[in-house]
Image (cartoon, rainbow, N blue to C red; front, side, top):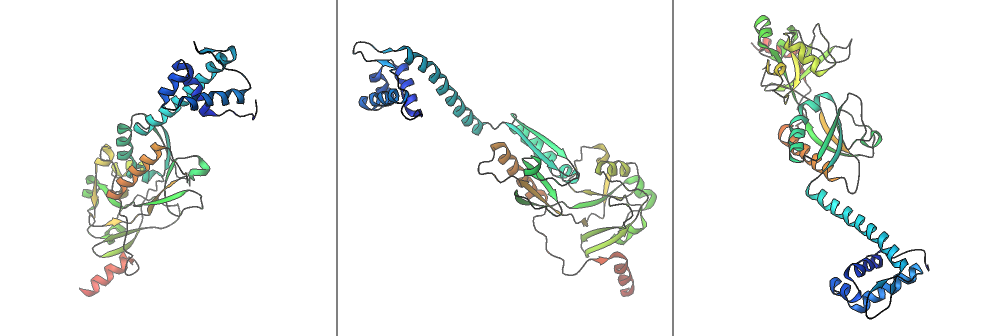
Length: 325
């Protein structure tokens, strides 16, 4: 063997010669001059250092080395052909596993309708969703997609803002009958509010509505660090709870809650979509990324005007309103 390397195109031509039954027939199939096909065979034999075909005008015949080489080469060509066909099929019908991570609020508010629709459309794609409260880096932790809120850590991942996860205030009708329905943000201070923040820290809810941005100091007897735990407490008439506006109504506990102060939203942080920076990301990952962004465009505010003034504390706002009266 002259160079230690074998030209793949010449191997493919040799396989075609054998399958066609000769150089002339292979040249017609490949739509190449007979001289080019014959030269390719001669060069391949030189590269291999072995005679593959007995030169005989009356019949085409492989040598023992030619037969052994053809058997191995044909399998290799078939493997490469199958791999190419698989890639082409993947473009038409995406398949494989997509690993995605998200915090509870975002996973509950944004992802359920997207993921359900996505796997129905692409039944050969499997999605693994990891719901976690810890910061996740797609590159470091091996995820294809990560939804994150709050301050982002330094990462080599690409980042796309998908919009704000705004929330509302909810309670059961039984609780509201017993304690009254808040009519203005300042009324929240007199209610049992289900707290979600760190223990020992006074919690404030920031609401945006017709009166601008209002900050209300709230309190309550129950603090729950899990979203569905807070929903369960609220559904048991435990008080007012702040929930993402896009919560799935199919959950009977959520269906039992009614929204109070519907003209106000509790301002949520902007959620981001992170994914590894790859030149050619797997097709299912690209499609799911596009589906999430498209859904978020219709449900999450993309831009929010900065308040003209700092948030007004509810107590001071109520005092000012009383003075004007």
